[in-house]
Length: 407
Image (cartoon, rainbow, N blue to C red):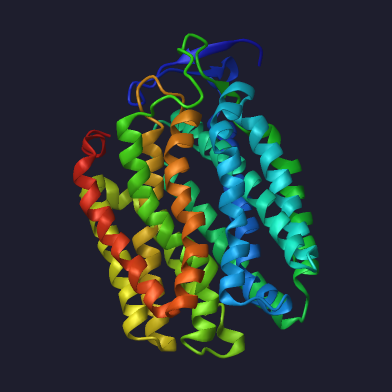
């Protein structure tokens, strides 16, 4: 696999160098690449879902109030912010296949340290590094997704994100099972970490080896970003804000507001993840039929409708259905935005994703701790009602991004 050749993908606007061996490779090997990248998406999702599924237990074990939990959760976006200016550049310079392996391995390790925390500062430190490595992993693996989509020359990004969502559902069910077996979070996290390290060892060599053309102009670290990428980031921010509270607060909402039985506290999270995964696996089909613009507008309205339904009807059956609607709403937003961002002319996919995620993941990570403070001052229902407004924001921002109709 020595030497490189520029396979020009005109839909992307910028050439990407793949190894020569990819030119005439068999379809079976391309499928193995797709499986490997998909399993990295799955591993990334399972790592986060494992943590999210045990948040109520960790909150209880450390005696955290809602405000305390909000403070703890703020360590994750702080870690994100520290690595954001560098993650895309690292993936571009050293190869996303390398940074994906490094990032995911350390992401899994930080999960174990979260479970090992016995004091508040232990948890705070572990969550900080959890945020650092989650961002590096996210940028690297999504760059791999864009490269793989280029090899197949047809939309598959939504399916990759579907693998992430299936992992979230799997993590929720696993968390339910571990709780039923009375296993503490540390034991639970060690078991998951061991399984994920096996996945990394079996699949890392199948990741796509590609890099950007060396002729691309160098940009300053804090250069003015592409305007379209900023608008895409704003839309993704609204979606990630909704996703973030579902991941971190759905269990608490079902426990404290819905008053679900202890064995069904994870039901809201699981139903959300199940429908998000379902929507992503069918997302490409709806995008081809309705178009990206209409799908994003419908998605934004569904997010708002689902969250408001959960607020107005906080009962087990109705809240579960409401969370399912939210899951369908958020399912296609991020895959569509990332796919469009990866096609921006003369911008490496890693850098484009870094720009979009720098905006969007502020919603994903800053939203949950802010919800804690708002809930402490008012109520958790009011917090969810406020977040519902951002779903409408997605539908309104779609008209600002001309690249959506052209992609």
